[in-house]
Length: 199
Image (cartoon, rainbow, N blue to C red):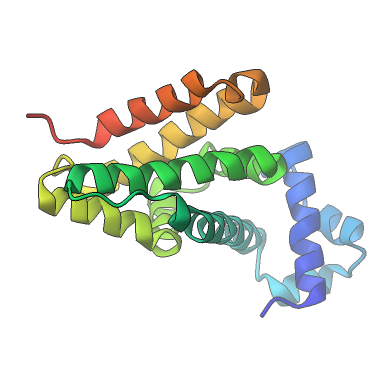
C-alpha cells in the first residue's frame, strides 16, 4: 500500500522528471518540492534509481488496469480465431492510445524512461511482462493458433512498446490527427501487420 507521503514524492517526481529530465532532477529537489525531508524520501526509496523504477512501474500498472478494465466490452467475439484475436488486440491498442491522450504527463515520463540509457530495455520488458500479462497471453495464444508470427517474445514486446510510443508521440504533438479515424485505424493496421503471420 502506498502511503500519502510516498505518493506525494511520486507525484512530485513525475512533475520534475517531465519538466527537467530524469537525470537532471536531484532527489533533494524532489524532497523539497514534495515538502518532505530528504531522509523521508530515502526511507521510501533507497536511491534515485529505485524511485524512478517505482514510478515507472506504477504508471505501467495504471495503464494496464485502464486497458484491461475498458477493453472487455469492445471485443467482438467471432467463430474466426483471427477476427477474435484481432478484435481483442485492437481494443487493447485503442484503449492504450486513449490513456496516453488523457495522461500526457505520465506518457511523457514513459517516453523519457524508454530513451534513458540508464535503464535497460530488459527492465522495460520485465515490467511489461508482469503488468501487461494479458497482452503477452494474447500474443502467445495467437502464435499457437498460427494467427500471429512465431517471433521471440522480447522482440514482439519491444516492437509493441516502440510502435505505441511512436504513434502516441504523433497524436500528442498533433491532436487533430488523433481525431481522424483514418489515422487511428491506419496506426492499428500498421501495428497489426507487424504481428500477423504471413501466408
